[in-house]
Image 1: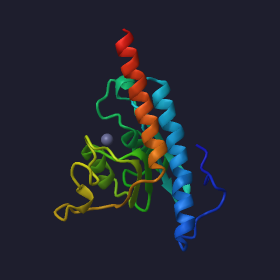
Image 2: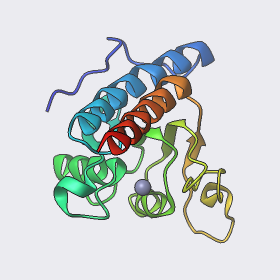
Image 3: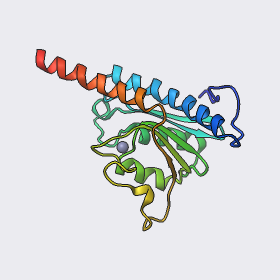
Image 4: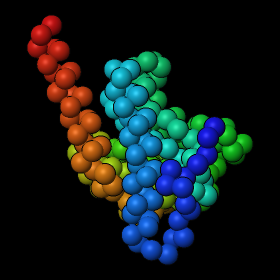
Length: 174
Ligand SMILES: [Zn+2]
C-alpha cells in the first residue's frame, strides 16, 4: 500500500498552522474514500489510519455491500491498518474520518489504542464524540484518544447531504 504523506513533508508537530494543513491533507484522503462509498450506493464516509505520517490503513463505509452492520469506514480502516502493521493494537496511530465516530467505532478505536482521532462533520444522530454522547470525555473508560473535530467539516457534510438529497429524489421518483 502506498504510504505517503499527501503534502510531501512530515509535520514537525511544532506549528499549529502546519498541523492544521496536515490534518486537512489526510482528511482529503478520507474524503476521496467517502466518495467511493457514495459511488457504491453506501452512505459516503471514509477513513484513513496514519502511522508516523504514512497512511497504513484505508476504509470506506460498506455495510450494505458487505452485509455487515459493523462495516463502518473506521472499522475497515482499523482492520486494514492492523493487518498491514501485523499488530492488533495501533499505538501512536491517528485515524482521520469524514464523520464523527459512533459508539461502536469509538469502542474499536479505544481497543486499538489509537492515539488521536480527527473527524470532519458532526453526526447529530449517532456521534459519540460530543454530539449525542462524549465517550472521549468519559473518565470511567480506561483508555482515551485525543479528539479533534470540524476538519473540512463543510466538505464532509456537503458530501453526506447531497447523497441523502439524491436518495430522497430517487425515492420520490420511484
Ligand atoms: Zn461507526
